[in-house]
Amino acid sequence: EAGVTQSPTHLIKTRGQQATLRCSPISGHTSVYWYQQALGLGLQFLLWYDEGEERNRGNFPPRFSGRQFPNYSSELNVNALELEDSALYLCASSLLAGVTDTQYFGPGTRLTVL
Amino acid sequence: QKEVEQDPGPLSVPEGAIVSLNCTYSNSAFQYFMWYRQYSRKGPELLMYTYSSGNKEDGRFTAQVDKSSKYISLFIRDSQPSDSATYLCAMSGVGGSTLGRLYFGRGTQLTVWP
Image 1 (cartoon, rainbow over the protein chains, first blue to last red):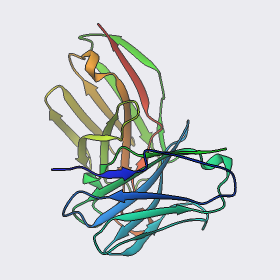
Image 2 (tube, rainbow over the protein chains, first blue to last red):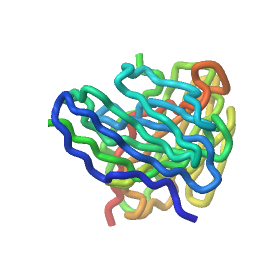
Image 3 (cartoon, rainbow over the protein chains, first blue to last red):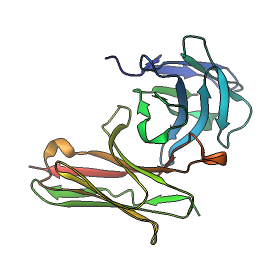
Image 4 (tube, helix red, strand yellow):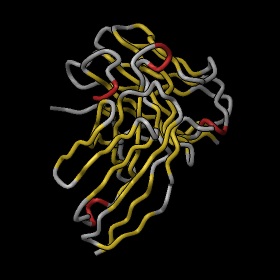
């Protein structure tokens, strides 16, 4: 069974640009979660999508947004990039909505903002 | 005060040693407690999860939760060089703004040398 996949692996942008990160959940999983792992800060919850709807959001500004498509894949958009947005962005999926004991993570997209 | 505190280490032990990893937390609403392992340049991999207080054993790994002290532990017996990774504790609540989100510690970097 294929795990959570993310693309691209690496992304380099300059300050002020927009970044789009993509995630495909495990087959059959309907919930997708996004986390930011910045150096020295640990994983911080960004967003949770289930059945195409945003269900919960972490303490991040509105320029962090996303969506979930009918096939349950998801996209994270970061507008007006700032240097401190440089981080590893991790996507996770779960079979049951909001069940936090079984979130499976992908390998992440490393975003570098210059 | 951060909601989940974890000593980042680094922790270095010889092969065969018993390793003890710990986290403390402040939110009494947390009900699910997890340990993830993250190898360099990979996404976190779920190792153990526990609901509420108690112990759980899986092979060489034992997870303990003491809700009265807001303290969780992971013990690794007969540690192996392949256990060298960053260990992340995570926890979550069951409703409200905590639904669907994991709260992570910063991670403890463990090295097991032969």
